[in-house]
Length: 134
Image: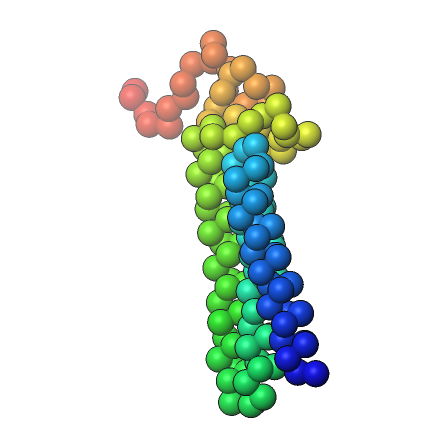
């Protein structure tokens, strides 16, 4: 019975890892690939670690496996966020696939882009200085 549970967990983990790999190859843009690299991969690792815990039949290994999964849960979203942020800043994404770009106005406002409404300065506005020259 234990072998059947371990086999099901291993096959499930392998299928999740396979789905992540296929998503990395098949998805069209950076943001979709970033999603494919993180979500199924974390679940696949959890299934592998559960299979290892069930197969070991010992509680001594469980804290180490939980620690491995917690580190994966902490590092995977952070790395995906950093990749997505770098891709957005360097324009390595397909804007035609975005339904709504919530960051576009924020980035334009922060950069002071006059082409976007709500930016900090207009193209004709003089630059104000705080120092007193008189």
